[in-house]
Length: 435
Ligand SMILES: NC(=O)c1ccc[n+]([C@@H]2O[C@H](COP(=O)([O-])OP(=O)(O)OC[C@H]3O[C@@H](n4cnc5c(N)ncnc54)[C@H](O)[C@@H]3O)[C@@H](O)[C@H]2O)c1
Image (tube, rainbow, N blue to C red):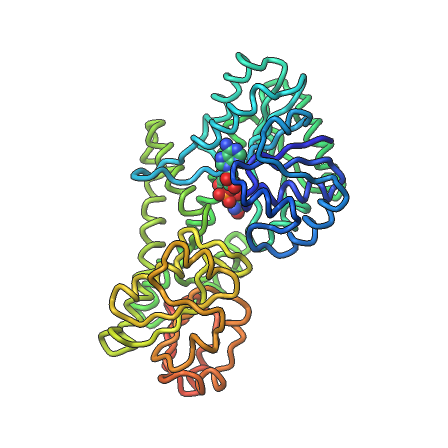
């Protein structure tokens, strides 16, 4: 199939490369010239495991091209919209202006029978609104909504082997579903479940999934607050809860909480949309989910103050991790980076380190000191704060690390270290909800 992918960020660049990997002819479009120049040269503009390989092989075959000119997408039969939908400044609603702009720019270039497929996460009702515009301005074309569930760090695998496919289509539109089936043939043949539904349901599946995941994380973080007050162990609690198949163990790790370019803004946008629909009460609990999550960042800072005897002023603190999760360079709404900034604000000499995220972190918070070397960050530190669970931080040896620092104090903001081993090596170890 001839495909265009409009918006080549974390989602779009992976989607475009993966579609080319599947044998489709793909053009990636973005308004960001630097991003497009890098992608066209076979270099991803961000860190994502496995992406360099499929991007390079697809650009070499000529099946994958990039352009800043949307007119170059005119040949495509299917256009995926993958532009950003960030939180609107000063409000919790999603900013859909990028979707609207990309859609408007695409309209004059739509071929006969073209299909526009939304991938961006949008407020429910967006697809119906765009479909209305399409009916007026390009009645030969149709619209589908195909939400994306990829996880950064696993984006290539998740795109090639999704756990489900959801198509939101107009009533009676069999054509769009059958074209999407052709695009995703490999996944469907491998048994991937596929749900064909209406626009509103497809849009809601995405935000409902993120709302559920966010709730699960905030639930266990709330339990960790109670564990702290009672001397209970939230990790053992989560293990025991997780054995109940109705609950499951995943996403029950207490810690500094969720972040990134999706979960936080998606639950806020969902709440805002529910309020617009006059159903604010139904999602009022998501505000609490958000509040619990944000509180975790302050809890880690409070623990740091406690560990240093009441003040972090002029103390060297090694912050391990700046990205919102490991195997990504994404620092959007990163709890790790927030903790570093809060500690700096209290007068600490913060040195933050991360395998991939420093460039992005520095662009947002140039006031922090950064190093790519965790040894350098740890050198002479009075306190270590682990906030992103990169493999290399999980694997730190308590004895060897102890020889680098000035004081053996560690806050495990992700509850990933073994408290027994660290304490045995003489460390003052503190986790969240761990006795
Ligand atoms: N990142 C994820 O893990 C993920 C997962 C699932 C869904 N999503 C959703 O996918 C969408 C994109 O997210 P992202 O993380 O890739 O964002 P991103 O900011 O990394 O990428 C968006 C891209 O769109 C480009 N863009 C903006 N306006 C444009 C226009 N008019 N024409 C062409 N390009 C334009 C930007 O330059 C940018 O490169 C969002 O709605 C997000 O919620 C993201």
